[in-house]
Amino acid sequence: MSKEYDYLVVGAGLYGAVFAHEATKLGKRVLVIEKRSHIAGNVYCEDVEGIKVHKYGAHIFHTNNTEVWEYLNQFTTFNRFTNSPVANYKGELYSLPFNMYTFNKMWGVVTPEEAMAKIEEQKAEMAGKEPSNLEEQAISLIGRDIFEKLVKGYTEKQWGRDCKDLPAFIIKRLPVRLTFDNNYFNALYQGIPTAGYSKMVENMLSGIEVKLNTDYLADKEKWNSLAEKVVYTGPIDAYYDFSLGYLQYRSVRFENELLDKPNFQGNAAVNYTDRETPWTRIIEHKWFTFGKDENGNDLPKTVISREYSSEWKPGDEPYYPVNDETNGSLYAKYRELADKEQQIIFGGRLGEYKYYDMDAVVASALSMAKQELK
Image (tube, rainbow, N blue to C red):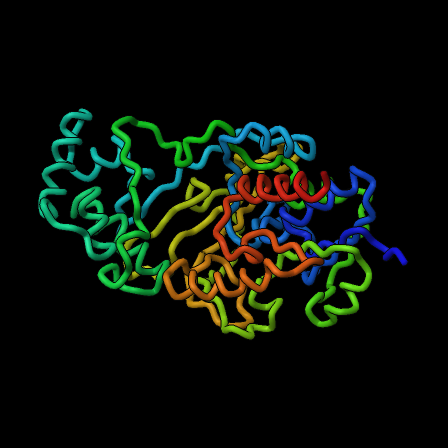
């Protein structure tokens, strides 16, 4: 007997929505179920006083992948937002990524030649040494001054560990620009959906059956019995009831404030790079849309989010996989189990225990859809 659906998609985030759209387009019967009360996963935006608030942290779309860009433009129009964060070190403001504005503020240098000479002079303390931790690696790339003011505190808050206790490979490179270019991502395509990410995902899922507030893992066998195949985008260790142990993540906590003023910090993102300030950054959401609502009207109020990095514990929202040897080895064991599954496809950042930028999630889902639906 044929089952009720060809595909059950677990999770209505980007990966699940792309796969569901592609399968439905080819005439497959698809059901999407989602544990949360909303679609769009971590790119979900909620409306507060006309401001699209990125509920799970700032999501700025950027890509060099033309196929992905054109694909998403079927479902939304992107604005021209360019990510140009500012670093606040004890009240001193610096441009990110490290560029000529940064070097001028840090050392008073004016020309690229002067900046490069200063960087080389600063890096000299690591000459001939192999970096054994993150601190040494950063100094070997950018020197002591920038490390102390713009890397050390922020990184230690993010990881909850001293830079001397973090492995060198976490910072493979630090972008150094000898120009006055403040475009953080330097990508060919960049922007924010004009109607918000939630609307973009809603358009992807148009005409597809979606059940919210539905916990797949609470009754896995029942849900599996409904479909020929399952696309699972939840945590891979949770699927196996943590039978081999918990994969570790870093989590993020947000404190949101609605302020009765038009402007709090004048920029979408300000990173606080000293160790003493407890939050890592403040996001002011209205600047993702240049301070205007969907109709182009100025927004009289503003919403800010302070971000606090934290150790993950079961029950917390998992954000960033901890890609060290221990977790890599544990994931490999779960992956062995997953590879033996005939009915289940594991995908997305949680299903693959992998940090994905948004464009890479879309590309991965499209690739899986092509392979699966051919």
